[in-house]
Image (spheres, helix red, strand yellow):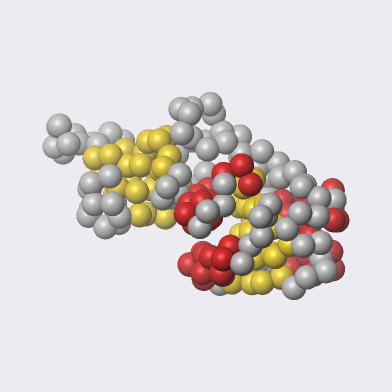
Length: 200
């Protein structure tokens, strides 16, 4: 899956770079189906990166799992969805040693959610690397009802919890791992701009 080029934006907007190996440091590596290629690229660049790694794949494609199994010395954990992966990652973080690195690859929603989980568990941000692979879909929080809507691809969009029509902002909350959506017609009820696809 090709990476997406993101336009420059405000400071809170996450930026992504290719994953870089920290050698054989203890690591937790997580990828969704699209991000699995980024982990495979990382392993190909330095096989030592998996020496002390725990690897979690979310709904992996079987060919990528098979390739990964051939490249690593430890079992690869597979999970059906982000919620299950979050439980496993929380467990791995609870026994993580000082110096543990986290590598996340895939969608913004997955990476945002797991970054928020990792920092809440005490992992510093400078120990977390992210590489975006996949679509420009966003994980959005409605600032009015606090509900989270996954995989938002249009601006404006309708909150899946309270039904308000929300403007997609570039402001990103690291604490909750989501972008912020604000009511688009609060001052002019019913005046809603035409829907557009979110641009990276």
